[in-house]
Length: 240
Image (tube, rainbow, N blue to C red; front, top):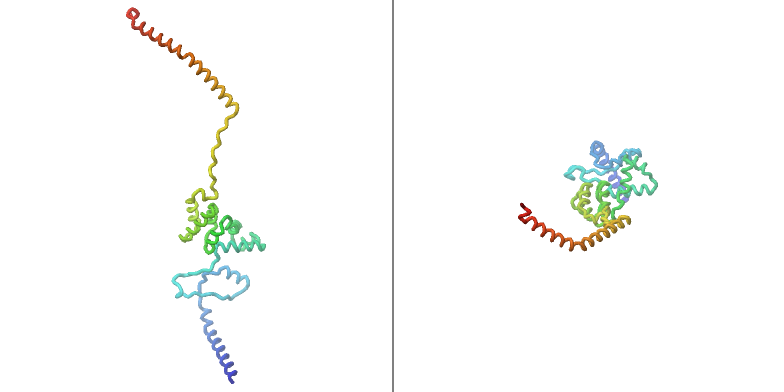
């Protein structure tokens, strides 16, 4: 009797659940909601021929903003996903056709973290950014990359313009594209020019010695001549 009573109670409970489900089914069928995410999942379900799929529905009273939470892959996770697909044998052309993007876009996504240090990559794991951001970060050394990423995260602005501004503010010694200026090499003159300069210097020294030897006698002659001419010009007989 007790066992029969339990079976009857279970049957009654199941029938009541079916009744509630049938009563609520028209409400769910008539209610229309806007899809905030899952566009690719819908396309995949259509390709598989599925008409029904479980969904998470957010009521209006649950939030003050529309579409307040979207579960999307971060840029770094997308990069790893593409890398795994390439490693498993998928071609880049097939990936480009599947995502309806250019082949250059796939290449940029695949090489997204090339030249980025592991710590900076870890900081960017949960963020969305364009492939132009790592392009500017590659021109910085590892310590500066980490500092730049932390500044962008603190400002909540992980954009290419912000990364470019930080790159321009980076000291030259912290950039990977900086080459220190080479010291100027001393000018090397041809041998013929050196010989000609030595010959001219020898000639100049000989002229200097000759002038030095004759300087005293020539100066004495000039002093005597000056005195003679002064007396001659001052003579009244000569003036008249």
